[in-house]
Length: 451
Image 1 (cartoon, rainbow, N blue to C red):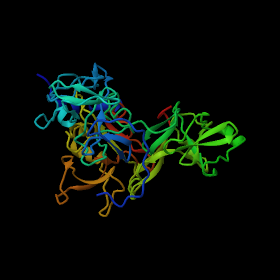
Image 2: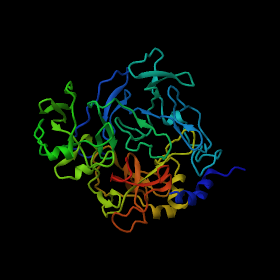
Image 3: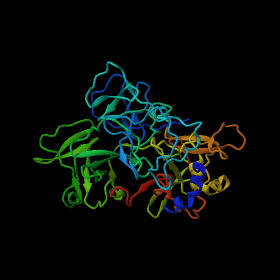
Image 4: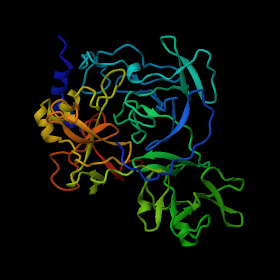
C-alpha cells in the first residue's frame, strides 16, 4: 500500500535537514524601457522590484515558465508549447529527492490545477503575431499568447496591478533549487549596447556585458567626468562608440577629443578594476562611489533592522534577530508553490518541526508586527496568521498573530540564533533551503552569489 505523502514528508525530515495597507510612499523613479510591439490588451507596467513587466488589461503581471532539467525528467514549458493544463495533478513526480514518484499529494480536495493557479493569457481566434509575440494552441484548443516562444500566464497570487507575488527575478532559480522558475517577463531595458540590467534585492542593477557592476562618482559634474589619471585606471570609464546617440536616460559625454563615455541621468559611468565577482556591491563601499541602478528597491519597514553576518548583511527584527523567508515548490509535474498561507502547511511543518506543530512554532517564530506598523510598499504587508494552522486569520480571531509578510509570504526568526548576526537557520531544508526550506533574508550577500 502506498504511504501517505504527509507521513513521507515527516519521515524524510532527517534526510532533508542534513542536506541542508501601504503607508505613504516616497517619490520613486522607475526604469525606462525599450518600446516593443505588443498585442491588443497587453501593456507595460512598472513594478517595485522587477522593473517594467508585461501585464494584461487588468494590470496583472505576465509570467513565463521555461523548461528545466530536473533530477528525473523535465518540468516547465518547452518553446511553443504549454504543459500547464486543466487536469489536477494528484501524485508526486519524483523529480526531487527525497520523495519517490507516485505518492498522493496533500490536501487533494483543495488542490487546483496548474491552469487555475497560473491562468493562461489567452488570445482571440483572429489574433495575429506581432513582434516577439506569437500564438500557440493549447491542448484544449484555446489560443494562448507566447513571448519569445514561451507561453505567458498570470498568477492567482497577484491580487492588485503591478504585483509580482507569483515569482521574482531576484531569485533566478525561483527559490526552489533546480526547479524551473516562474518569472515575470518584460520588455528589454533601454540601455546602450554592452550594458544590461539585472534584478537584485537592492534594485535593478546596471552591469556590463560580462556581468560586472557599473558605478558613478559624486565628484563628477553633470555630464562631465572629473575622474582622470590614476582615478581612470582604477575606475574605468564605460566607453561610448563614435556613432553613439543619447537614448532614454543615457547621454554621451566627451572625455577628450575622440574619446566618449556613457552617462546615466547625467552621471558618467565606470566599472571598478578591483571587482572580483559579478554584480558586486564592493565598489559602492568606496567613499563617493555608487552602484548604478535604473530603480532602487523599496525600503524595508522602519521597525525592521539590518545586521551584519559572516557572509553579508541580513534583515532582522527590532531585537536584531535574523529574519528568514520560507520557500517551497511541491514535487508535482506542475511545480506549484507551497509557501503561501493558502497552500498545504505540511511541507513547512515537516522542515520546521519534524511534523510537530508546537516544535515548529518554537523553532521558527513568526516575525510579529507592532500595532501601528505601516508598510513602505506593496512588497510588504501585515497579515494575520492562525499559528495553529498556518492559514490567514481575521484580525479579531482569538490567538491570531499580526505578522510581517514579504510578497505575501510570512517571515520568521530562528530559535537557534543566539547572537545578533547569527544565521544558523540559513539553508535548512532541501537544496540548501531553496526547494523546501528556510533562507536568511539577505539585503547584501557578496560571497558566492554571482561569481
